[in-house]
Image 1 (cartoon, one colour):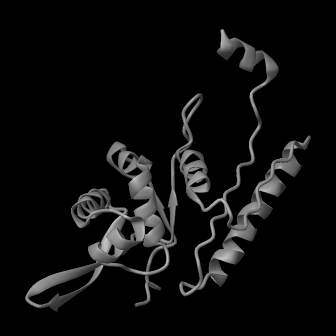
Image 2 (image 1 turned 90 degrees about the vertical axis):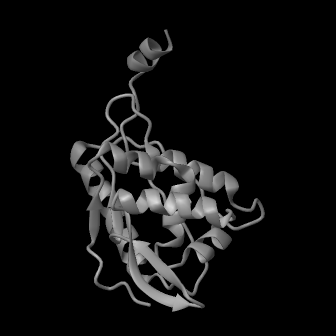
Length: 179
């Protein structure tokens, strides 16, 4: 069931949308819908939720405009709805100074929930870059993620790529925050 007509991006702009995407369960539901539409029952099975809980979270995502019904069909007199993401990518607002970054919190939670014996590549590098190099690296990382997103095959197991390129707080800022 292709979703080729989806817009490339959906920009989260309202508090309702931010609250909807900030919840870890809803984040995992959106991950299920990333590549192909699914019913409430399918979502519940894949996320490990009761159907009622799954339905509740999907309704909140739908109300916020993050997911939408892309197909319906009658099954034994009941209308079955297939939900899909509203866009290929969700763009969150800058968390602002001192604000938690929702994506990184979810990424860490997903990493911690991943099977300990599964293959993973996790690393951290401390770099000293000019502003131009910083911008170039950010663009290259995004282009690499976009390239592999286009190669994604829904029949293959999920893999998550998370990257964060940022200027850490200066020593003075970190010491001031600790007081």
